[in-house]
Length: 115
Length: 114
Image (tube, rainbow over all chains, first blue to last red):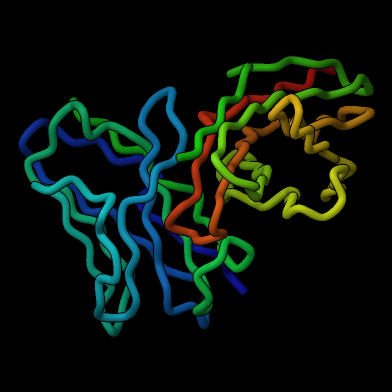
């Protein structure tokens, strides 16, 4: 049973480009969470999605960031017109339905570097 | 409000010697506390958790942590380090247990020297 799969592992973008980060949850998991870890800081919650629904995006920056979790396929975190301050590690986690930490499984993260 | 501080960003120990990774927390109410570990190219894995039962908590791979309310600490220890313990360790606090309300520390990178 594969774990939470994130790709790419590393992503390099120039300022103004778009970044797309993908997350495939564990088999049977229908809930996805995205977190961001800025340099020298801890992970911070960004957005919580269920299939085809955004449940809570209170941690998302108001502009340029969006997330989706379609009926088929992985969850996508999209950052438009990236800036240097977007450079961070982005982690995805999935759970089977209960919104508690004990049922949370994390991916290995995507390191985004903006030049 | 809650916060967590990991006092060391990097810790180096020799194989076979004790490990101490320090974590202090701040919380208005009785929190739940955990440690996660991330090995290279792997996802974060729950190492152990404290949820107001026994103050000394045992986790996987021989790690344990002690909740000390008077010191607002939750330090992670292991009597004898192994090379496979080299990883990044995150201390986490939450009041609700919700995955949306986890407060992570900035992490401690543990290096184990042969």
